[in-house]
Length: 251
View 1: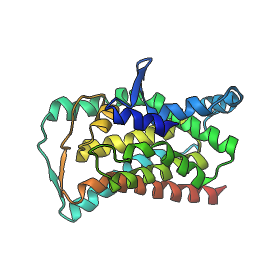
View 2: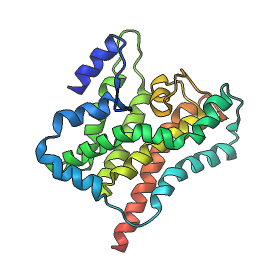
View 3: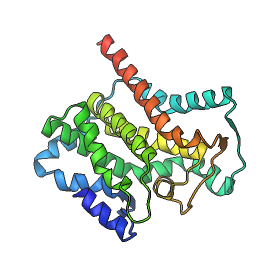
View 4: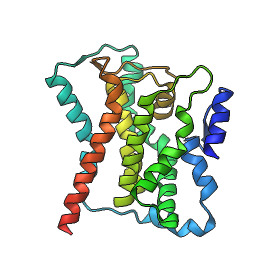
């Protein structure tokens, strides 16, 4: 259903998001929850929102900052990075750092909706790790189907597969809707802000800005740049998995 609606909207060049109660909701983050979630799931939703699991550690902060620190360090040591002088340095760049809490709140509702949907799917359908990952991949499938003059983009698929794997990891092992939302938003936010992006959709959704592109604070080798977001997500996945293994041994 989500893909049918998404393909239709793309075919007619219509937006695949709506503004609801002052919050922006992407089709893939809202529609699956509206279709699947029923009254019988209210207890699961209530428990997820009011009593999220928390391991009383600050590992979540490391999950957010370590990937980009590792990437910056590797790029610096291999001489593939330098300081950039982007257009809209103050209007978009610096203001986006100051306005991070606002952008996070702007996106929080749709990310919580997605995480609650995945928790309900896990508990109702008894999906395991790969079942949840495939569910995330499936609801974003329409985004990379070539329509009209659009070309098939393998890198977009790699990014979504990486994000789906990370989402499944957090949902299966930690089930904290708030950290889920913060981690996902911040990983994309910090990478786009640091390295730039030509994705109007991501810039509009994450930064509530009407820019078509952003050059980034750092000038990166053009052959490497497109791979940095999926690399950051994969690093976050590995770091979270190692954290889970470490916590499991202590219990």
